[in-house]
View (cartoon, helix red, strand yellow):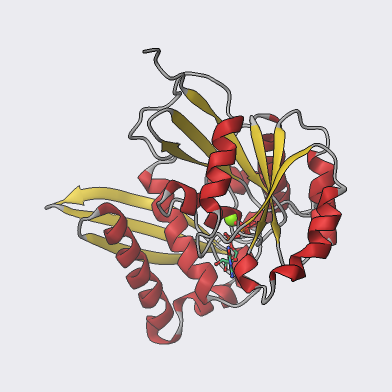
Length: 300
Ligand SMILES: Nc1nc2c(ncn2[C@@H]2O[C@H](COP(=O)(O)OP(=O)(O)OP(=O)(O)O)[C@@H](O)[C@H]2O)c(=O)[nH]1
Ligand SMILES: [Mg+2]
């Protein structure tokens, strides 16, 4: 009996902010590797999620939502991270929101138009539609786009038709030996994921504007007496923001620490102790050097 050939390749999730790219990656990998929130521009880094089945290794690439504003250093960093992914992968999953097409989607179409990768469209959030017929005008529009291999309506949160997407992607990957060990699920360190989980709690809890002005830097990550000690600095841009993050009598910071601890304990299956500080570094998000020193250092 001949041995089945292995398939292995890169699949990038591309789309405007907030359409569910990170939620979809987490669902496919079966683990929470990427942070998600209701606010746009949650993902800032490229993150790999690796899924290995018997004969196939999917290397999923989560990317920041593509958006128009390129003036700010942080936005430039995010757009660059998404743009690079478009050119280095075998398949692009162009994720759109099933409730409607926007100008932001037009921008994505333009940016992926020169790729040599195959393109699949995932029409996400179909659980939000009362009737399936509501999708028809959108599907009509999508059928006019060029070079699209497949269009799959699905729901990342409910898991509907995510298996169809997986099967489709599997058939599109090239025959190749696995790049990563079968047990490996991401290219990122646990230290990075810890910082991201803390940032997720902040984004979810704080007002609309504040998330963009903060980042998290891990200062301590060590095991003492069987307990993981995580110490992190939350960097903000102004004193006023610092007091919001700390909250009345430290209540907000305490709650952020508690939720981060619970998530980390669930992920690692061990006791975790989280210590947080808030510090001000004026204008860090628009300063290329400050960005690099805070870990925004991918080589593009
Ligand atoms: N109802 C519904 N909500 C969804 C679905 N998928 C994602 N969401 C929600 O949409 C919001 C955005 O999800 P994310 O996964 O963070 O979106 P993203 O595309 O990674 O966003 P950025 O990283 O900001 O570009 C979150 O509140 C998710 O829970 C879905 O299938 N149905
Ligand atoms: Mg995301």
